[in-house]
Image 1 (cartoon, rainbow, N blue to C red):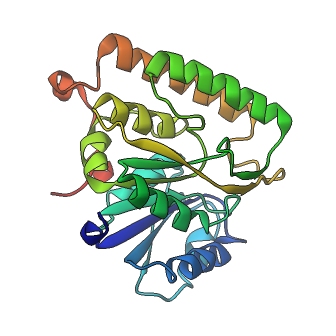
Image 2 (image 1 turned 90 degrees about the vertical axis):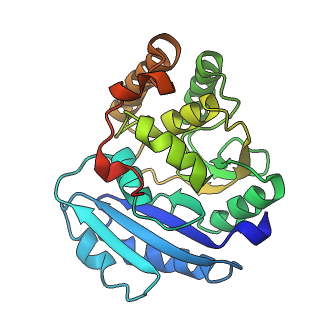
Length: 262
């Protein structure tokens, strides 16, 4: 596999991160400069609601591309918007704010090679993960993953951590079928990939330092409620509507901004 990897793309979705975004990008550059492959970083500013875009543009590197749009549309939209503008054979994303140590990018890349995987998922529940995470959230996460596994057949212990890597060909098949743009997009991408036969999905350890003061991420009760509603919709589309199947291609709403250009 190593001879077939030519280029790595890393998407960084960012929302209200004007205070940290330049440092976040610099940390990712530091990690990627040590890997054996050429790379690009695509920073997607999810709405012009503060100076995140202006701060990100201060990074002067030919390997960094900063893009944005005016209205906040949610992390799922931002990740897919960035993925559609990548060039890599492998495409990863990591959340801005760096709650997850960016050195984890090297780890998921190594796991991708070791297993010749379709997808590697950074997992809070991997035995080797180092996680500073509220006990209540651990319990909720465990119950949620049991529910997801039962209804989707997806054998992954943590679908929600903000670090994942995909083969480009997986995303080429998956992205046009997706409906979720804001909350449970991680789950939809994984469930659809698994449904389409991309079964080589494995977990890798991460180092997570949970930011208790950040109200923009998945820690709020409102976010969890909306994510669960999205999850129910994904299960309904998957098991009852069979929405993601090729025979329903005419029903897919494929925003041209969120799929790869041919």
